[in-house]
Amino acid sequence: MNDLSFAALLTSEGQALLDEVRGTAPAQELAVATRLRREHPVELVSAALGQARLRERAAAKFGAQDAERMYFTPNGVEQSTRTAVAAYRAERMRALGVTSVADLCCGIGGDAIALARAGIRVLAVDRDPLTAAVARANADALGLAGLIEVREADVAEVDVSSYDAVFVDPARRGGRGRIFDPEAYSPPLSWAVATASKAAHAALKVAPGIPHEAVPAGAEAEWISDGGDVKEAVLWFGTEPGLVRATLLPGPRALRGRGLPDPAVRALGRYLYEPDGAVIRAHLVAEVAEEVGGGLIDETIAYVTADEYRDTPYASAYEITDWLPFNVKRLKALLREREVGVLTVKKRGSAVEPEELRRKVLPKGWGAGVVTVFLTRMAGAPVMLLGGPV
Image 1 (spheres, rainbow, N blue to C red):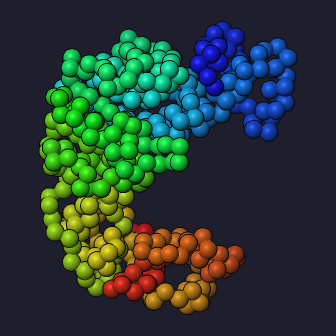
Image 2: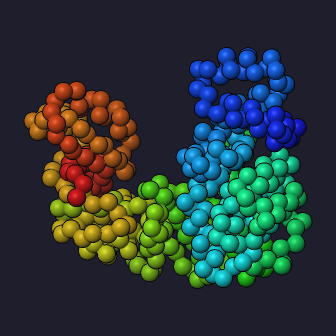
């Protein structure tokens, strides 16, 4: 899709085509395209079908109701923030007293939409003409044009001094895939930090794998998960410098770092705790261990063990019934003896692929038993821990 074909989608003819191709199954696309091209330009038909596919993909992030009204580019769907995460960030901005935000590198406008729905006025900036046009169309489609101004420009040339806060979401993908070096972001992290330091408040979205040593001293670092999946890290300015936080959605539930030393390694207890991914990324496993009165099963593994069960929102708890050295034949015999028919395989510190192990040890029709097996290490040795969720 290019600028011209996207502009054509916004015409009455384009809107009618979008309505007609909604819900077209992949197997029907060729026949539908052939029929529609008899009456409509080829480029417009292709753009409408492409947009229908993108809307279906975007429903997972934006919800079906919004996705059916919005417009997308392939990169926009891939790189957009999930609505729940964007709404949480927008609410944090609103709670800080922010009434206007310069959204730099706005993409298709997902974050700008969340900010506007929180009652915040937004300047959304992107240098790509098509992306900016899509963001503008999305603001119109969702009835938020009165709060969102979309500007096609280089973010380095935009004066943001009149805005309460700055939000920067640098591009973290290149021609070869994900970019892991923050200075290779577009724009680089150093530029974003320098821009953030000039604003009363700022939030910089970065990859969750950002090294902790790359976090500026004056920033609060927050790792966010949604439904157990780590989605992003955010560097906040104008909040609590030096704070490390793990936030779990839905909720939100926030675990604040207290600078605790690494937990001690101890013998396996009755319970095993699997910290949320945001907790692990934020290096806050020690806070979870203290909360449940436990320790690590191995100094290199982020599993916490304890003798007594304590409920925590920051980790999933399992009751362990057995542990044995890694041995596929022994595991298979044990599962058969207990008539296990449903096996969940989790791993940390193991090179074994869960699906491969499941195929080897669990033929169909053994029984109705349910077991979770953890492939991990204790005292540096590979082990298998068996149990089930509390």
